[in-house]
Amino acid sequence: MDAADVMDDLSEVLFTSDQIADRIAEVAAQIDADYEGREVLLIGVLNGAVMVMADLQRAMRSHVEMDWMAISSYGSGTQSSGVVRILKDLSVDIEDRHVIVVEDIIDTGLTLSYLMSNLASRNPASLEIMTMFRKPEAAEMDVPVRYVGFEIPNKFVVGVGLDYAGRYRNLKDLAILAPHVYA
Ligand code: 5GP
Image (cartoon, protein in one colour):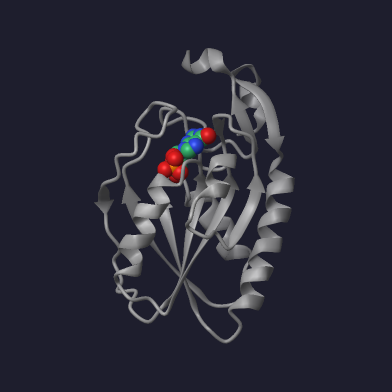
């Protein structure tokens, strides 16, 4: 779906699908160069990272594997709860693997800092983070993020895999959700 299909529900389109595809291609090329000669395992966080994961992998030119985790985050609200729970764990052992965690968005960073300490305890050869979008508060967190697609304002956004109450994940653009939708 395009922004035009749900225009009344959006207050602003921040990035079009073309801009997002271009940026993903840049990040993919960077990862290819940084990991030359080493095979990467991408770990996606369900469900939000599904779209970014699919696009990032296909834009990469080297061999890459993927696996998924599901952790609890927002429910159907728009505020981070701070409650983090593993709902689905990895299927593979990451010991001695070069791991990049692929995130849709980092807001407070609460979800990610929990996830990173959990993954680090499994002894990967290396562990980095790629996020498609990052909000201002997250830029100050102590977990270093190696690859950032776009910095965005502190607004509730949807599209590119990000939902509100299960909807809008299939929106190809990234947009600010109009407050009347969740008020
Ligand atoms: P954090 O723990 O960094 O505050 O939140 C991370 C998770 O909250 C993200 O993976 C995402 O699921 C959700 N989230 C944070 N900000 C937004 C937003 O603006 N829109 C949507 N749809 N989800 C968000």
